[in-house]
Length: 297
Image 1 (cartoon, helix red, strand yellow):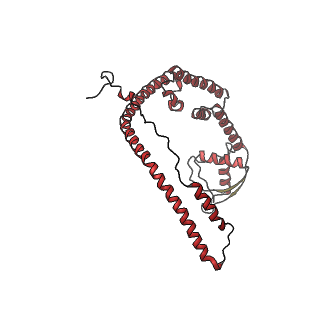
Image 2 (cartoon, helix red, strand yellow):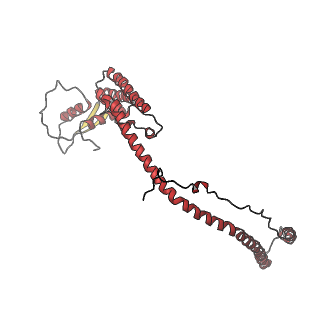
Image 3 (tube, one colour):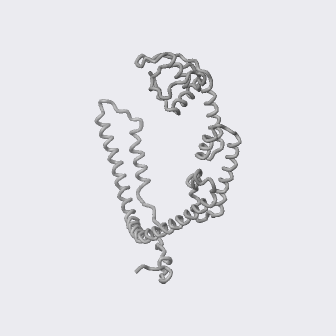
């Protein structure tokens, strides 16, 4: 049967349990003949100071090395032995504490899952409230400014007030109203593109930069270009046709020229332009925008 904390009286055993460690006897320092060994070693090892071996007595050097290494090993072995003896009671204590912690961890983990599930339910409810607040306050911008673009994960926090969320969304709407008016007052022929940039970024500055870019591109395309046209021998295009194609590509007014047939065969023209890097970039953008394929010869 599922236990209900509200109806079942719970013993307060867990709250009253505390780890109680009996007073430890003060550990005495490990006693050994330290001074005797230190004095003896200092005197015995003095002969090795600044000692230089020659090829004739290299065997003696090896023997001395073996003797000193053996002495060092015997000292280290005793150190390890004593350390292990002192670690025995601690390791026993450590293992028992780990066992007790595992007993506590199992129910704590189950409770944690329930708490997190409850918190997620609360956040789901808050998300529904946020969606309602958005719908009621976004106004005519519903198709242009999505909730995802405005969403602040902090809104889901229990302490974040609904009135604050409402005000933040309303502030975005007010700013959009003001920014759109500024864009419309520009009377720009690129108003559609500028607004598109604005609603992608919600940044008036970036929208105005886009307007300047488009104006500059138009200006560059309007400038006459000095061209040298080469005829593609494969297609046998006349020079006059190539020049007409170039005039059309760079935006030269040909309204007074003899009209062409409405349906024209695709042609391939090899030409060279003399222009600035900015003008060349603008020409490329124009060609891409109008579906004109181009590339290196």
